[in-house]
Amino acid sequence: IIDTSGSMGGGRIELAKEVARLAVQKLQPHDKVGIVEFYGSKRWAAPLQPASNTIEITRALNRLQAGGGTVIYDALEEAYYALLNAHTRFEHILVLTDGGVESGPFEALARRMAAAGQTLSTVLIGPQANSPFLHDLAEWGRGRFYSCPDRFQLPELQFREPQSTLLPAVQERRL
Image (cartoon, rainbow, N blue to C red):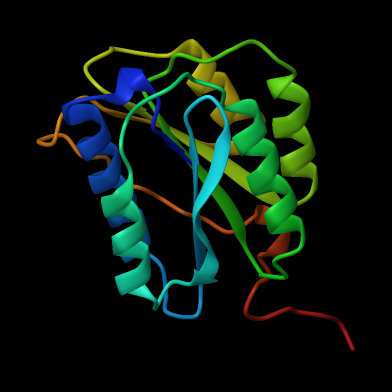
């Protein structure tokens, strides 16, 4: 989910695109990726598709431009419902924003996502030191919070599988 509101103008939107490119590069060809942008409303910049379709994903990122307001809740909800129907083994939502958001029932939505097996991570784009809201959102969604103040300090994104799906390679049992 990428913030394309007016506050993301200038270098921030380009920084968000770079972080998104890094995230896509970490995916396996059989993984799926989609891009939801929000700018006062939500829109699928790229529908959910195989991560191997790098040309279409890159084109969608290149088309993003800043302008409009910041309404993130609808975009989060859109991604949540899309992943419910995606039938993938691991589901992760990454939010790229400069932190300015409206009020709403974010905690309930993030916890609903986590209960459905989706993880939610956030990336603060720009020179702000911290965003308590984005930190809380990542915590509620069982993900991670990252800060990306400039292009020289890009985050090392970690996508992990839910703990409940991890099984030991060998199980010892008494016969």
